[in-house]
Structures are given as structure tokens and as C-alpha cells.
Length: 136
Image 1 (tube, rainbow, N blue to C red):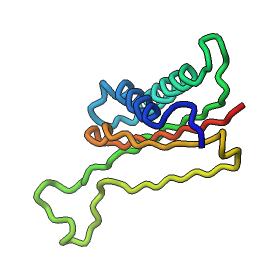
Image 2 (tube, rainbow, N blue to C red; image 1 turned 120 degrees about the vertical axis):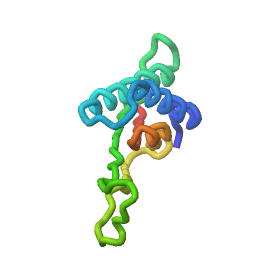
Image 3 (cartoon, rainbow, N blue to C red; image 1 turned 180 degrees about the vertical axis):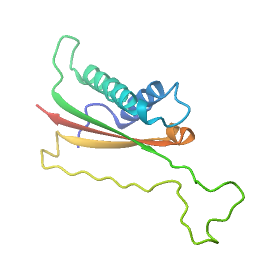
């Protein structure tokens, strides 16, 4: 698989986009997720288009698709100091998530890459970004 930019650079682009979009967020706020996702996606797309052009006046030789998913960490509703296990009740806390993707294409020119933003955990959320590129 040939990436339009290096994997190291993909990680930096995704991290910078998430850092910027979530810079003012302190916790997960559902009303803000659409704006956060839009900012992350647009920032990544702009960087990919800019960095994949063979020259400043050329068109990029790739089509890109970017997906951003923000998942809220739910808080345990039990008051501190209570033992929810003893009562048989289930705790609500971090949620599990598994995501997968597949494609049929030219393995030498097309590809996909996924990234989990580590900076979201302290704000009560997971952020997962996926990038797909297809040579044109």
C-alpha cells in the first residue's frame, strides 16, 4: 500500500486536527459533536489535499474520504463509596467499541488508515478517525 503521505505525517495531521477541534472542550458535550467532527474532517482533508499535490498548481492524484467518530464515556451513576457489584447492578462506564472496514481496490495505489486520538480520554470521550485514499 502506498500512502499519499507518510504514516508519521498522517498521525501528526490527525493529532493536530483533533487537538485544534477539541482545544476548548473540557468534557463531552453532545451538542458540540457535529461541529467537532466537521472541524476534524475539514482540517484533515485540507492537509491531505495540500500535501498530496505533486506541485502547488496541480490537482491531487487521489480522492479522499475521512470519517471521524466521537464516543462519549458514560459516568457511573452510583454515588461514590457505593458498591454496585454487591447489589448485582451493572456499572455504566467506559463502553467498548470495535470498528472495521474493508475494500476492493488496487492495493498498490489505494488504501486506508485508522487512528485513535489519545487526547480525548481526559475529556470523557474517544475519537477515532479513518482515512481512505483512492488513486485517480
